[in-house]
Length: 240
Image 1 (cartoon, one colour):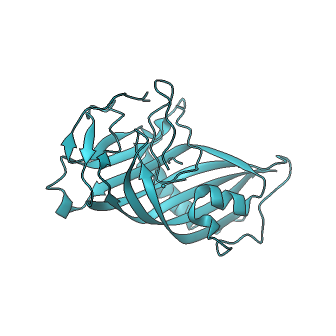
Image 2 (image 1 turned 90 degrees about the horizontal axis):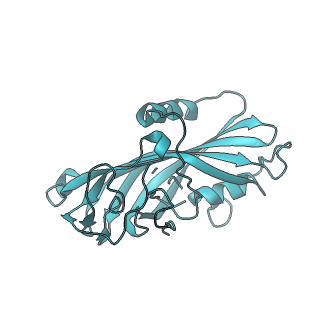
Image 3 (image 1 turned 180 degrees about the vertical axis):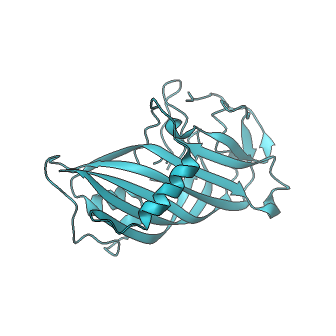
């Protein structure tokens, strides 16, 4: 997942040693659940499918965006490692009397690193050891998450037809804010997210690892890092 991931909205996620799957997020406040499912889906193919859905005019489909956003980005150790800028796009589909699926896309994204542990430092399950990242390096990012929304009354629709991202305080600049604005009183969670980060060519000379994929377990899990040096960390969180 494009402060995901999952997915989550984009402060640091609280990680419990040995009990929580290694997650990271481009926003704080989103309830990102990295629970593994019984199948895996190619996230690149799925992202293209979400693009197609985002262009659909099928009945029961609502589109919102772009919403310019800026957020700190948290890594698997719970620290912020970059500041992101991106546009949010939301596609809403009703899936039941009082349930909806929201496909949130993060496009046109860039990041600037912060002096910190790299985003993948506390998840070495992919073979990459923990790393540090120097501040001021730039790159691109994009991604998506899929949120499951349940109305306060799951037998009655709760999509507010008067909701707007132009309301006071720009409610759509976080996932949680969007759900609160468009689905009053509803709850949501997501266990599906995928975000891809890559260092610009001009920054690659400083980076020893310059590609980071932050994904839920059912979308392949985390891979790589954004790092300028190796290090050690005091703990390793559980991985997929």
